[in-house]
Image (tube, rainbow, N blue to C red; front, side, top):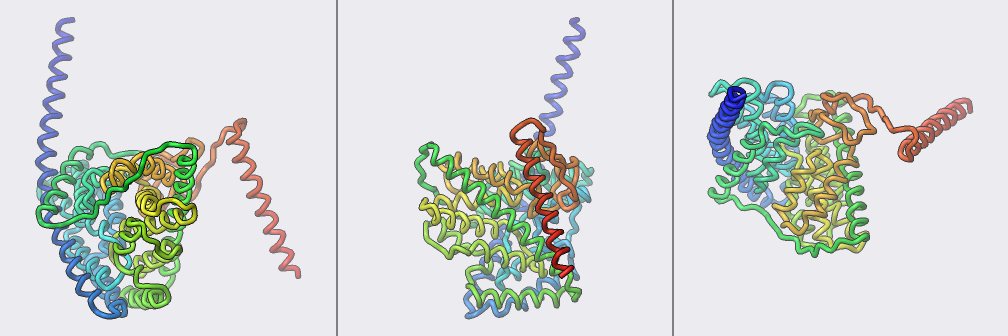
Length: 470
């Protein structure tokens, strides 16, 4: 018995020692990654700021959009194809399909292509390049230290977290985002500690280098009531539907553009011309990052009610026609303006619901409700936390099994009444099975909806047959 206890004690000591070594190892590695990514992102943000200020100082600068789209598409087509589109999606795809391997040319090409796209007025964001630059640096370090595939994945996830943390000034949300965005219904806990370290180091490096971030405390008295809960439920559903519409708009425009069988840079010129026409029809507020409009909403000012719908089209067109950039900053724009619109309909505080809309749409569109909830606290203060968290979860559920990142993998469905084969990539899902229990009210409701759906289908077929006969 004593021998058995002694062996158990030794095993526990050995286990603790191994874990201690793992903590030290990953602390050192994550510090290196965070420092390198912090320097790179600071350079990226400063270059983006200078180039954007220069271009927007030119009257009617957006008339040069076709040229900007052409240059961006030319770079990504001939120098690094993976730098096309929004970068976070490419990193997720690399982690799932290539153990996180990212080619070295992607880093400078993504850097330059994004700066060109945004400076000339393309409606994209800055988180995608940050994630791809961070992931690319991590992949290079993994090659240098000859990491095996499992450690390489972990290191690249650290790069995503470091990039996200330093580009928005949200180190905790950035760390969580890196491990949450890979799967639906699961967190990659193996990378949690190094992601936190990399995110914190990267954030502090960028602040030391003079990068400033937008943080605004929302003054909200936390009064829980039935009406407040109803408002939270309503805005969560509204943002979930908005997220659904945005994803479908992106996919729809991408399908249309893929049918145009032109040389890619020429197609990008056509996309630039389309964006110029849209700008002349509506406004130049939908070009670039759109930070001024986001700030207006968060300060309680009104913007055109349809702003969130127009921004969807601008962003979808920019990415589909060959622009390079991220998707999260446009999500912030769409979420903030959608929240502002909802507040104007219901007579609620515009600034509060713009802030809730910003994080709520992020949760739904990216399937990252935990990171979005934490981001609400980091950006807007702790008072907004309970409302933002509820809205984020509702939006995440209402959006369904779709995402702006189609390479996300299903680990667990969002409801036990829905069955999707675990391990399926979102873009490969061709069938969703509803498994509601027969004798419950919910099961009967599902059956009723299915019956009405079949009945509608039969009526439409009969109507088509009748029209053909006439």
